[in-house]
Image 1 (cartoon, protein in one colour):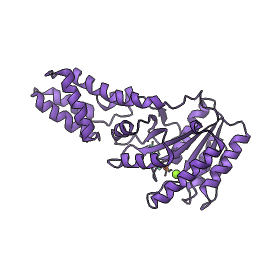
Image 2 (image 1 turned 90 degrees about the horizontal axis):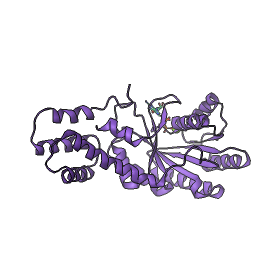
Image 3 (image 1 turned 90 degrees about the vertical axis):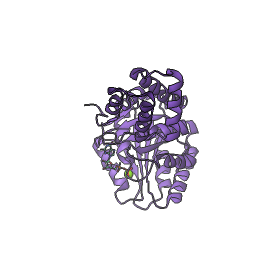
Image 4 (image 1 turned 135 degrees about the horizontal axis):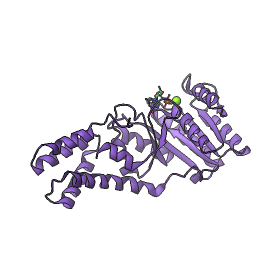
Length: 293
Ligand SMILES: Nc1nc2c(ncn2[C@@H]2O[C@H](COP(=O)(O)OP(=O)(O)O)[C@@H](O)[C@H]2O)c(=O)[nH]1
Ligand SMILES: [Mg+2]
């Protein structure tokens, strides 16, 4: 079964072309479909304008879809200028997971650990969510399950000190990758973001900036405010990429295109389930194929 089998976009686009229609009507329908797939209006307009320019008065289904896909793919390709390192390139790197509550950070930390362990990386986990009662113990449980070491702190402990301890251990031992989970909460946002900024600054004391990779974990069902979220986090940690979670749900994930377009950061991974193996590197061609064609 396809990951995106619940997408209706494909069927809807096919339906437009199924019945004989006027070109203007086709474009009006395409617009509606793209906007309901969470693409922002402005971007949708830009894409359709380019479509008209390239395909003239043609209402050839395949040509129109190809033109739309090509433009969306260009957005993803542009973001790859700041390409995320391959598993081979990761050596003394820190992945810092940030995002709001419930987006899947802790689960994703475990999934990334499992993924990179399979690539023969030696991994240390840091459980810096000391805010929630089960915040850090949840990752410790994952660590036990995966038989990977976890540096954690008690509830209420300074997350900066957890990161500090983790980085000390990371530097003193032959680990190649440190994956750090952080707290995410909607209330007290500024305080949370300041906390992240502090975590980031502590990391810079140990590692050069190019070895620190703050990744925004984003629930695919996040609607309009996804971009605001991304911009805010970016302001405090300078994001290196995005992990799009919960694509096994009904969400279409189209919002991600806006973020990639605005921030020029790549989507690095997608996740599609609660188990630790339900993660895969992001593939824009596949994503778009499922989204549209
Ligand atoms: N269906 C599904 N659930 C997920 C996925 N990733 C995380 N979850 C669930 O989402 C909930 C919140 O995840 P958690 O990692 O605790 O989020 P955090 O608050 O950001 O650390 C948990 O019930 C996870 O099992 C995913 O890819 N698919
Ligand atoms: Mg968590």
